[in-house]
Length: 438
Picture: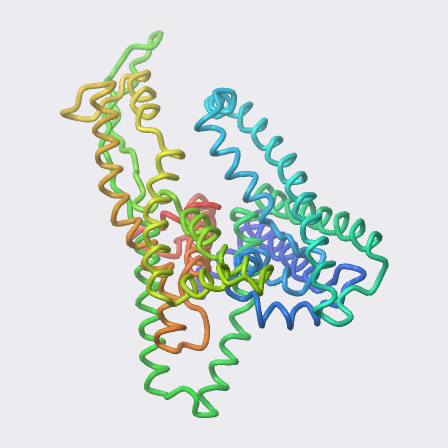
């Protein structure tokens, strides 16, 4: 492994890309310590830890790398960009104009990227306005929260948070273009990983004070390694559909006669189903923070409290539903069959056209089911461990999927650079297939 690490820095281009990526991620982490003007970040962080850790704002804070609870200039993080990307993907399934853009190749991709940037700015303005209004409404409950004129605070918050989001988006795009790995995913990745040292230190302190038994800690570590291994295996798991292209004459050359395959991932939707489901399932608890005296809201909040059976069952069912829903949006069997037919490709034993589309759809439906069950199991794991087993910190769920997926994808790109220049990769017998990019 040491030789592989040294090989990474023997290649000038790869070394430059890695150092560039690290430098921009350091800039992102430094910006996470600059508080928005006019607000007491510590007061907000203390209130956040008490009342919003499991709510909608807690989910938002996960993707913001903890910047939301500290009210930093990167408080919105990259979430507006992710939301804009998902919205445009949904548009591509229901609006003909965006569907045509998806099929126009590089020109269409650039147009969609431009729309995504505009959508990011628009969503950042709307969300920053909502946050400023919400913070002003919370000022009477949190002493010394707002330290300046309300109108000036609102205007300055909108400008600061929107600018911070655009800057984070730019950092991600620069990493993707000039660094190594997917920049947007790495920004989220580094925000999640930055929490690990604190959580590990808290766990070790609980072991020293006797709050956690050493045997329980060993069992916990073994279980964590096992779950991580399962996530790695499921992230790379895929079903290969064989495709044959016949020989044909183009000009004076004979081309074709190639055997290849279509890789269908078991987890095609990535972490998107968990994001959708969690955004809906935590709504009652988030609503309860706004209407504390409502009997109806309090009842819903008690039923949908994390760790409750109703919460876990509905959460898992929604993840399964959104796994099928999002897979149907991002992967169209009809388009795959038409593209194969256009170039003369066929699945051995299956007729071209509609029969091929039906065959792909049937396989996709079957492999999505274990992928959806796997996602549901990983997503409810933190609630079961914390609220049922008394585990002191989160393990599993969205954060684990993102960390594993991004790590595999980045290692895949690094290995590609090493293999092109005749260096051994990180794995000798197999090749990393990587995770789904965010």
